[in-house]
Image 1: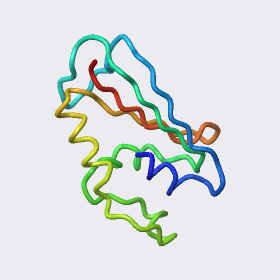
Image 2 (image 1 turned 90 degrees about the vertical axis):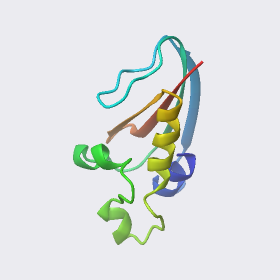
Image 3 (image 1 turned 90 degrees about the horizontal axis):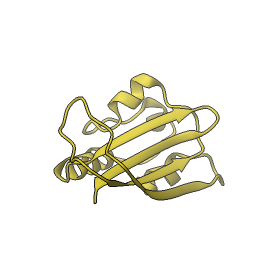
Length: 112
């Protein structure tokens, strides 16, 4: 995810990584998450807002946004899919948000 934050962020913009302990992992519609405290690792870049339609598909295998294909940004569309499967196996969760002002933030939650 850090590689993606650098690759897809605005040129010469900051990428931030924050980690903190949280009381619980956010619920998921499609998987069971562990109970109890977790570590939340948030990775943020400053880049264009990602549309809700694209946000919903980012962790699909081989999915790449058309804008990135048009810019000839290299990738297979597997990285986020693999990361999601690893997090699922640990009974964690991944959330993503994207705004014009704050850029895009991926947060990985893993049980302690």
